[in-house]
Image (cartoon, rainbow, N blue to C red):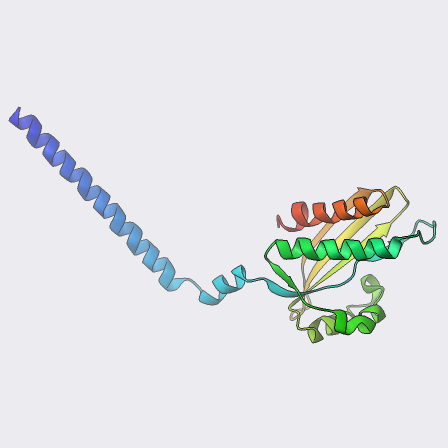
Length: 186
């Protein structure tokens, strides 16, 4: 009986020593990672970046002409896109209202050789978001969303999707899908 107690005592002490060693090793590793982690990189990853979100544009090749309510639909899509991007926590929209005339002069942005970059830079943005809906017909449309880094001039993200319909609900759902399922997962 005394032998069994001694064995259990030593086994218990061995297990206790292993647990202490594990805690010490975890503490040392954590201290190492904190000491050598790049501080600037961690701060930038958690803060939303100033972003110029340009109005959604329509590239209409349907031959159907301008539909009533189309300008309001594009404005609704732009507002929803802004909300969705800010909700990701990676983007903070800058106010482009001071540059209304300059923004209008950049249209069509999908074909202006980056004429929008100066407007975004002057607005204090680090990034620019450009979105264009290509309307093929009342039934078929596609949307492309580009995110550009103003400093480097490079596109850092692109997402595209096709959608059906030419009404407010179709546009809103297309941008919800594009941001939540395509852009936010990259």
